Image (tube, rainbow over all chains, first blue to last red; front, top):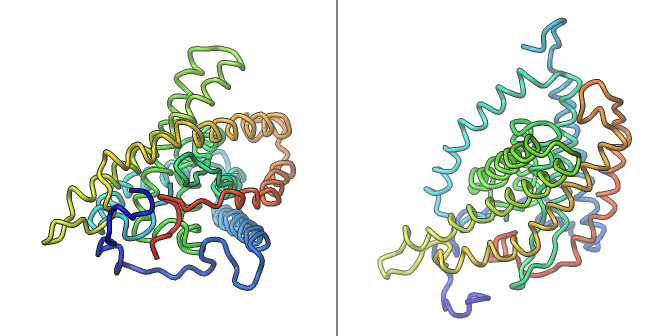
Length: 69
Length: 260
């Protein structure tokens, strides 16, 4: 079964299903060596995630004496 | 463990996304109520942890690759509801930016890795910790919880794959989506996670917890010294080490979108 050879066909829903083009598919930046692309992806991902929550945090109002909104 | 698009039927994706909506709603409410303004960035750091841990692909028996998720670690650090949000956002970035995990399958991936994994892992950890009152008991709870969490998530993923050929066939009786039945998908997903990925998850969980407890106990215990710089340092260290994840270049059975 491995490699799909025993199957003999590609299931139709998988052959022509939904396609989404990611910006940096599979953590590979075109024209860059794999390792550089991978590190760049790691930096981008980690930076975006920390920044997103920093922004959410900066929008949150803190009330004195209560941590409820 | 990231399910690509078109491996699951759209209806399966809708069901699992629908199951996640109340979970997300409760998690957002909990985080809003319980997490203070200055603790919120910790969710982002934890999301980055999870994102980076998932980049460390390890070769698995059977010719595929797998990775840790860190969901239990995050649940222990900031609570299971915050962990749910952190891992969800991490999965969202992976799907949208890197094509890691499908966009339609986002609900399914969130169900497995942002819901089942951190909650089960956390509750097993808490169960053991509350009964074994020592640092050792806490670490054992952490290891067992994280190991069980990732394995349960792998099992859920396997079941979601395995029910596809049962539910969705064309007129000729051929499967329309993931073609392998439960008898194939369950061992294919669970055995590598029991043998390798689960162990990697447990090691990552305990190691990172011990590191954070040492350098920035305030991250874990209220009122203790919190050194965010050291935690950021760990993020940077993980970034620098991330190419190790490239060493395992097997075709992933349920990771990425190899069937393009």
